[in-house]
Image (cartoon, rainbow, N blue to C red; front, side, top):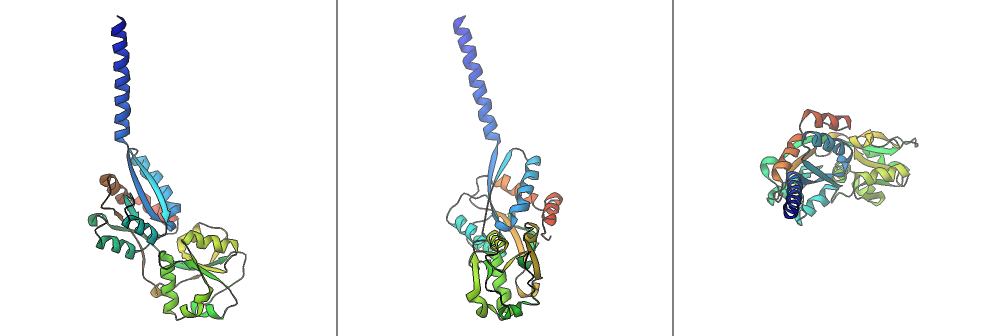
Length: 255
């Protein structure tokens, strides 16, 4: 009888261990690298996604699109890439580092010039920037931050980039641009229209003419190296659902 009881206990323990392993196997994890400008709405979108797909855990990493693309090129274990411009995604596509049939444009944005809300600075046009008494303007590093690339395009297209270059402060992403202007460390900054929704300490003083820079389109795609491609595809598809688009719209993004 003693051996029967011992066998029963061992069987129950093995069964419990098996159930535990099955639970673990049923849970999928995907790693999403996303442009810093998406940090607000994307957290909310992930919460909504998890309600419909509770067996998939999404981990987010935010940063400059250029840096994130570079990490993917270097072999970072990323399942989904959300870029703030098409150029970085195009580079990965050319190198067969994304699954082409999963690529989709899921939102848009606009470029704006901001100042600290406590200042009374006004700017009639970008052409007027060199003649102001403002000492420093911040923008994302054009080499890695799409918002900085768009800002550089606009300034070059109105012919003031060379005049202003010495007064420009380059930031690692748009969040840092916001921080610089919020703190008063710089007078002005170039960010996205959606960033105005993220801070009560800054104000928009000019919406930049969209003819001066490339269209700001956000593409998403599953990486070729993803080990959870099906779950990653489901997440990318969710970005274009009515719920996700509503969250993006509320955060100041376009569709």
